[in-house]
Amino acid sequence: MRPGEDINHLVQRMVEVSSTGAAESIKSALEAELRDARGEMQREIVSGVEGPMREYVRQLVLELTAQSESQLEARIQRALTNTQANVNAQNQRQADVTSIEAKICSDLKTIPARIHEVVDDKLAELRGEMRPNEDINCFVQRMVYETSSGAAESIKRTLEAELVMHGMKYNTAQKNSQLEARVQRALINTQADVNFQCQRQADATSISQEKLQRHTSQIRSETIPVDETAIKALIQAVLRSEVDKKSKLEQETQCSENPTISGPDRVDFTAQTIATIERNIQAAANTIGNAIKIGIRNLNEMKDSYRERQKLFDDAQVEDDEDEDKMSTEEFRLQQRIQDAWRRTYIDVRRGSTVLNAAGNVLLGEDAHDEDSEEIAVSRTRTCVHEEEAIDLQ
Image: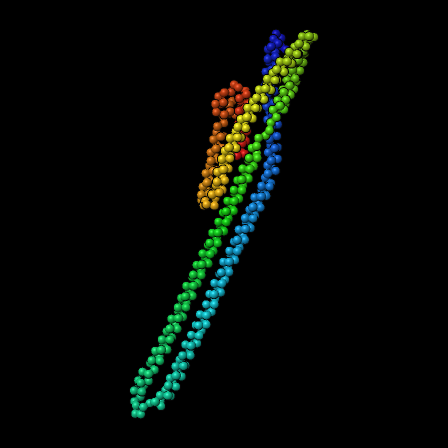
């Protein structure tokens, strides 16, 4: 106690010094304990959920991949079988054409010899048919006239054979082109089907991952139970320990500075100081407890609103899943981009509404202009911290 200083001034000065240091130490201790408890609980929840969900997603992807590969192999095998059958038929037709050409060539080679043989036989027969006193020119003209009809028939048959050969070649070329076109269309259809299956697998995987993220964020955002009685007791214990230490130090300092104070005066002064400190401790504990209640209530309201938004989003997602088979790939991608833009806009709006005051406390809206109430500042600080954590989880 300073010389000439009143007891009320001394008590007020001690309360101000003790409440300032105690409030800062209590706030830091509570924040550290709550942060550690929340982090440990989140790690336990995430470690217990992410492992089975990842295994489920991996098994689902493996099953879809095996199914698509088996279907693709069956279709490729059928295409190869059809192609082999067409190739065998083409080879058979080519062999038939080759045998016909060989036969025609052999026939063409034997035709001149046959003609000479027929002519010789015919001349031998016609020598006996030659009329008496018939001129050789008349005989030749008569023979030419008689044999011209047979030559015309043989030429006609040769031309018909050539026409048949050219027609077969044309038909073979046309069949080959048609076969190549069918094989090309079969390959294009198979590739398109494979691409479609891969896209469906990617969509199914992305949907499973999104469901896993929503489930994880929902588990992380569950309300952590808070024991208000234990918090108040802890606050009082910390305040009382800090105030007791400072009061003892102050008393020792005053005793050393004023050794004349002793006896009943010292006892009354100590009792009065202790009573004043107890009242200040109780008031500080009630103030901090009320601030924590308000922060918890605001956190629960924010979580309820977030659950309602999440429920609306889940209902919309269920409707999207029911209409997924009717939607094309472009429509699905467009809806995904719209949902991502909605999430980013919501996060930007929620983050943009926070303000920092001169003391470093986070306030919202009109509370940024009212910094006189310690209860409102503490409650808003807690609310904004939990709100930012919920936004990050989302």
